[in-house]
Image 1 (cartoon, rainbow, N blue to C red):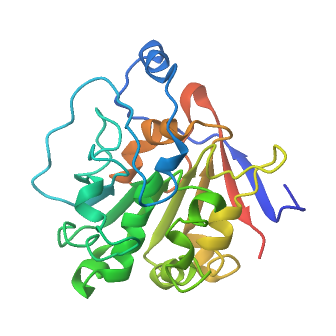
Image 2 (image 1 turned 60 degrees about the horizontal axis):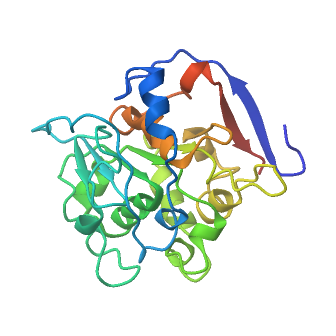
Image 3 (image 1 turned 90 degrees about the horizontal axis):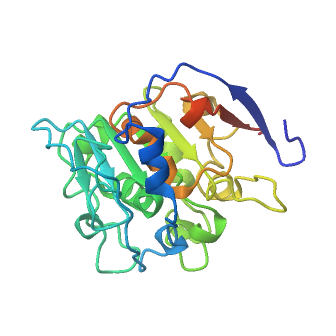
Length: 269
């Protein structure tokens, strides 16, 4: 427990129910990750793009019935080649408007009947913009949202679009609180090195706590919030390791590679 920072950590060792990765062997995965570093811009400003990383293999064929949609921070629809985080994966240019911080395009390519939304890195904004602009029929069908290492306070402010989604300085707090007020809705955040938002080596989660969850923490809907933290896990690894949760939302925190336990984060009200 971190009393001074206002959150509680529980180490859990659940069954590896979601461990269905596109990379089959530890050696192959190690070869993939060595030397890869995702530029910080991918997490931050919606006006900046960076080159994607790739996993070996080809993308899985599309599913004719779409129940899950993934928002990518890149023109590679799945964010990282060779994985399948959802039935439908949307590249950056299909959900990001040419007008800075405009939500107008995010809901256009999300099929009716979609029940799960997910986003990695800057793709978080696709999810938030959908909540802002989707017509009632589309909005009501979405029961699950999964965010993969969405970002830290620096990503959300200082030119990032997150800070002012609900009004100046309000972040996305009201938007997410309104959506999760339905007892059938569930929000899962997979946190790695970016979202941990470390200060002096200590994870603070200041970004998501201040700009995403402030109106959920301490409320009944907090029981529908699941935050799975994997200390110091590289930004791209969060998606590689847990991409299947975009299509099959987690109801508990899965273990990571080599049975790495998850830290379940609970914020004090």
